[in-house]
Structures are given as structure tokens and as C-alpha cells.
Length: 247
Image (tube, rainbow, N blue to C red; front, side, top):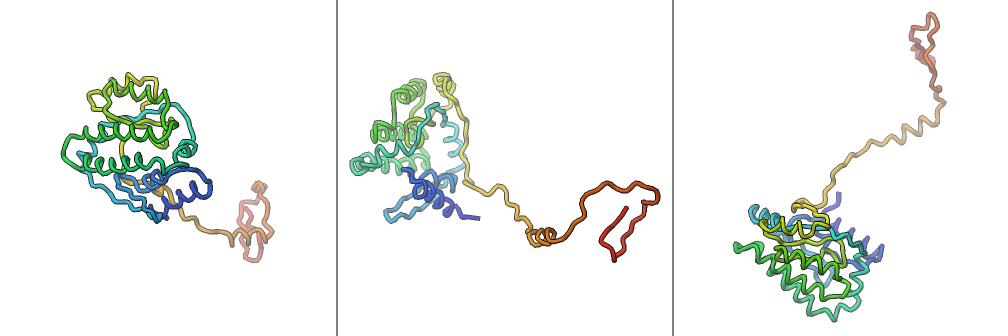
């Protein structure tokens, strides 16, 4: 029964160390913990996860403003990530800008102002992220993004490393029908946030019968056979001195 922290650490170890993929650690941490969290990746390798306490009304409001679409573009996330991980020092300005947007996003969600500010931050963050590498976006993704914005989306982004996969948009409920129509060639994936994270959904501690099985294999067991239906066979011979029980 691993803790959420242990589960995240093991998932990171498998992907980064055993498989050797160039991937981050945020997906593993967030999938293990679930809910809304402020995650700090410290220089010494430690990861801290601080839950954000949003009211049920605020969370429902955020749920109601988000739309998820599958672009149909497949790509390998590690391949995209390699394009900017190899020269990460040259991306310091963009990475610092993305880090600053995290704090602004927390303020927008936990405050009492218009939640539309979060959508504007998403748009700003996407402009920064797409500048990390030419592989983060492409003309098809740009066309999808602009079509969604033209139909009423305030902001959005490609999920994961970029290059394809899923895109999420921040759309006022009044404009969502227009956005869905504008992106009708894509798969719309309705979703809601959850708070539990990864869980054990089935656990059955089975009884060990190894000793009984070994004992059985060491003995001569009578083979299966049809019951004797001859006259007088409707008696049970259960003599303790014999190894047979006849019907």
C-alpha cells in the first residue's frame, strides 16, 4: 500500500531512470495526489505538494469554464521535451515567466475576483510555452487555437510537452456551443476535476495453500470416475480403515 508520495517517486524513477525518457515529474506527482496542489520542485530533488483549498463553488465554476479536446495528433512527449531540455539554460527567461504565472494563477483561483482572469493567464502562459521550442506547436495546433479563440475561448494550451495530444480551453459557458461547433472535427472530452488521486481499487489478500498443494502432489489420489449405479451400490462405505468412500 504505497503512499501517494512513494507512488509518485516510483513512477518518476521508472520513466526517467529505468526507461530513460526525457520527461518531467509534474504528471506523476499530480496523478498520484489528485486535487488542486501547489507543487515545488526543489534543487536538491525533493518535491513538496501543498494542497490548495478552493471552495466547492469556485471549483465548480472552474469546471464549468474548461473544455478538453483531442487533436488527433499523436506524438512522443519525450521527443518533444528533448528539443528544449538539451539547452534549458537558454530558456531561463521563459521558464521564469512560467514560474511567475503559477503564483498569479493561484491568486486568480483562490481569490474572489472574476475567474476569467485565469483564462487570460492560460493564454499568456501558452504564448510563453510555445516559445520554448519550434516543436511545442505547429500550424495545425495554431489553427485549432485561433479557431477556439475566435469562437469565444479566452485562453488555452496544449497539455503535456506539446506537439499534439490534448488541448484545453477556458471558455465561458455561454460561448461553449460556438467553440464546440468551431472544433467539431475534434473529439470533445467532457471532464471534471477529482480530489482522490491514485487509489487501490481492488485488494484481495489471498490465502496461501502451497503446503496443501505440495502434500496433495505427494499422495496417490484416486482418479475421477462415474458413480457405480449397480444394484446394492447405494451404501456408503466410510470405514476409517480404508482410503475409499463408495456410493
